[in-house]
Length: 343
Picture 1 (tube, helix red, strand yellow):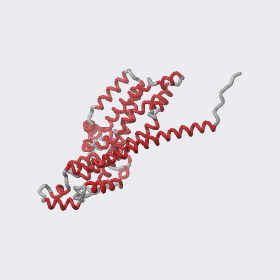
Picture 2: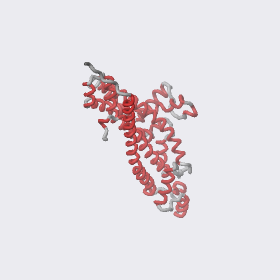
Picture 3: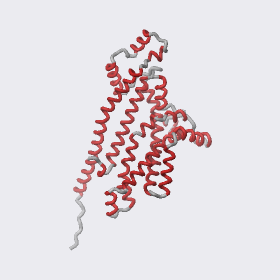
Picture 4: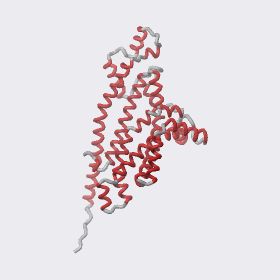
């Protein structure tokens, strides 16, 4: 007598779904706990070293305000006003407490609040960096996937050659070319300046950040495409993919359910430091496009010897690096297949 398997009871299916949800949540919470456990000592050490740079540098606000010919008495008076005559650990404790509350000190050069100054520049740089990351990840994903699906063909070789070329093109060179062609030649985009989305609207905001974002995105495109292509090709040779082929699954389902999920991990991991580097390494690009961003502010602060501003830049950079890596780790914990997890 022929028998058929009865469908699983709704309660059983619901129990399986709950179990899977709990496992997924557990992986995310475990990744979050590991990231926080790593963040705390890294942040403590990094902020201590950052603050110690002032003592090692020998810089003083008195030199900036009074000049090199200032008398020792005048220097001592100014440093006492800034609280620099107190013990080092006492200064660090007060500064670290302020950092935890979002206060990064006062600029030596103009007496302005460093947090406010960084906030103005960071908004510009974050706008450009986010758009550059979106462009880079999108194009890199398309090119890397296309090269992997057409591996060993002329398409694969063309994509590989293209990403190799753009990977060696400096962002400032790309920026100059983009300004000459699309701003000056075609007059499609403004050549310089910045307006916020609240002040000028979304359209003008996008037109001002598109060219600098394109200039910064080339390196992201190349890294994502190369890493994704390699990881996807490697995923096709994994046992779980071979098993899916044996079970008769279609190519599309095999790619999206098994290959892509297995190959995304290494590509996502490469983004861990990309976003903070886009924010901090855009000094030349910001000069080309006339942007008063975070990178340009950091460069000006370093050249003027404004130690509180430099310390604030370093603290914000540390937070950006750790935060973005935390996000990447959480995403990896969610999308990485069980066969690739360490636990």
